[in-house]
Image (cartoon, rainbow, N blue to C red):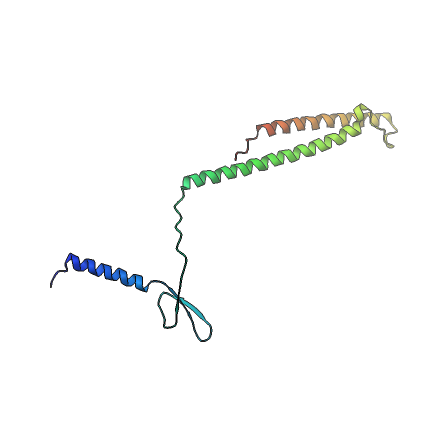
Length: 153
C-alpha cells in the first residue's frame, strides 16, 4: 500500500475543516403544527439562526478573590459586632438617663408607698448604686467599641 504524502494529508485537513465550517451553524425549523426545533443539521425549510459571538472572559486570580471574600466576611463580622455594642450602649444610656431623671441629683420625689422614711432612703441608695453600675457598663462598652477593629473598604 502506498503511503500518503504530506501534501495529500494537508489537502485532506483543509477540506475536512472547510466541510465542518460549511455545515456548522444553528438552524430553526417550524413544522406544520407550530413546533419549533433547533438543530445543527439543516432541514429543507429550516432557516439559519445568526447567534451573537461567544464572549470569552479571561480567568480571574482566585487568590485575589479569596482575599476579597475573606475581607468582606471580616468587615461584616466587625460591623455586626460594632452594631451590637452600639445597641447595648444606646440601651444603657437610655436607662441611665431615666435613672438620673428619677434620682434628681440625690433628692428624688417620695412615692406614696414610702411613708417610712427608711424605705425612701433605701430607694435613693438603690438608684445611686444602679446609676453607678450603668455608668460603669457604659464606660466598659465605650472601651470595647474603641478596641473593635476598624471596618476597611
